Structures are given as C-alpha cells and as structure tokens.
Image (cartoon, rainbow, N blue to C red):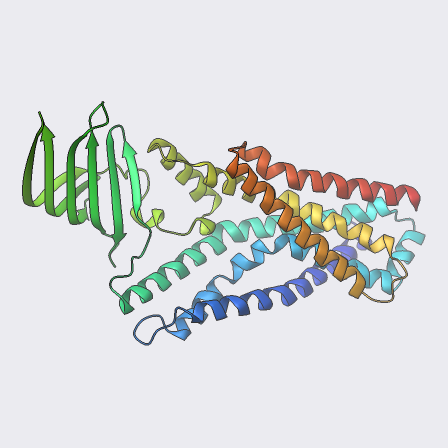
Length: 359
C-alpha cells in the first residue's frame, strides 16, 4: 500500500468519524427520551435508563454502518475534492479506478471492525442492558412479565412458560399432551419450577388433569419431575431480544426452533441480513465515489450530503419493504436478504466504471 492509498483511507475514516459523530448522538437522544417513558420512582430510574442507552451505543454504530459508510465517504472524498487533492492525485497518475480500490479497502476495514464489534461487544452489551431494564421494571411492578410467553413442542407434547423470576427460574408452566386424533390426553399446570443440571425440572404447585375413555381425573401435587424439552438453549437466552443476537446465537436459536417444530424464517432472515450487511456497507461507500466525481466543482458538501441522506433513506426503506415481503410470501431467506445489497453494489461499481471511462 503506497502513501497515497494510506492518505485516502485516513481521510475516509475521518469522514466515518464525522458521520458517526453526527448520527449516533441524534438517535441516542431520541432513544433516551423513549426510555424515560418507562422510568418510575420505585423501579426503573433515569440513571439506569441512561446506562441502558449507553450500553446500546455499539448497536447503533452497527445498525447505522451503511449510512456512516455513505455519508463518511462523501465527507472524506468531498474534502479532498474541495482542496483539489484528488485532482493532484489524478494528475500524478491515479485513475478513478485506483482511488476506488483504496476507498473499497477502507470500507472492508470498516466492515470487519463492525462485524467484530457486533459479535463480541454490541450483542453482549445490549443483552445486559435488556436484562438490567427488565429487572428494574419488575421491581416496580411484580405483575410485569420479564418476557413474552415461551413455548416449545416435542412430538405430541406442547409446553408454555409465562415468565421467569429474578433467578431465571420458570413461572407459570403449562404442559399439554395430545393423542394422535388431536384430542387432549393430559394437561399440567405448575405455579413454578426449579431447573436441575440434568435437564429435569421439579414442578411445584402442580394441578394435573387426565382424560381417558371419556372420563376426567384431577390431581393436585406438591411437586412433580418433568423432563424438559427446552434442552438446546437456556430459558434466559430465549428471552433476550432478537435484534441483540450475535451470529452464533442466531444460528443456535434457529436450530432450536427447527428442533422444536417452531417457525424460524424470521430468525433465518435476521441471520442473513447480518451476513449481508458487509455487502451493503461496501455498496454504500462505493456510491460515495460517483457523488464526488459527478459534482467536482460543488462549493460545499451540503448538496452532496443531502442527496446522500436521500439515497440512504431510500435504500433503507426499500430493504425493509423487500424483507417484509419476503416474510409475507415465505421467500428464500438468503435471496431476500442478499439480493438487494448485491444489486446495489453492482450498480455502484457500474457507476464507478462509467466515471473511470469518462474521466
């Protein structure tokens, strides 16, 4: 890598920092205002709300990665164009194609950095923030559920768990057994359960009903052993928000859903969206190159940034529409998630090739 490439990459990363410095405070301010709606005197305090927002900062950085790539590229290259440094580089023999390679390299570095941040920093921090808020809210109102009802299936056995206590033990367990003709064979309700290390649960406060030959029998037990079907994942993992899953956790959760006969398409799509984000970031930063060379004599960055924001918003809206259509029509998750960013990258590279031929 020569000195010109290093200089280009450094200036583009300065643009990334400027774009992040503009976007992240804006979004986190709105998020903090949102969090204040849940603040109460006895439970979730404003200091905890602020801590939750701070802990989700890396997630915002990752989610805004494509916008940061586009706006940062426009800022970095725009400053070089305004100061005529790009002109000097081209006079020294640098073609637009060679400049584009350096810009793509900076996008690749950004992509790898954001991927590592997502897997090992953003996801664990966001999950801890979610748990912190859930515990604080539950302290203020014991009737508030820490999670949505969990459910799973194993053959003809269906299980639901209403919520978890502060020690991540299940509360409100219902177990349904069905006959081959889909009639109910037995029903168990337990007030709570204790999870053992071997996958066994000790159900407490058990009410059991059985149906056989048209007769119903009812029993009340202090405790009952039950072999859990929540074997592949802990209940704590099942209650964390989907958008906080790392790639490893998403892959694990998809296998769990498939093994328990639950729909997994939404999570497959989320997984492939994560895998497709690097393509989208490279496409967005590639689009910064046509912005720079199409308006070389622009007096300022305002017009370029305005168009960049519009392009970014249109890209985001289009991506969300395609993703939701994919869920609605049960389209292939890989194609739904990867085709839009790949198509955008092809368009961006075609524009770069065109400007390179013209100039």
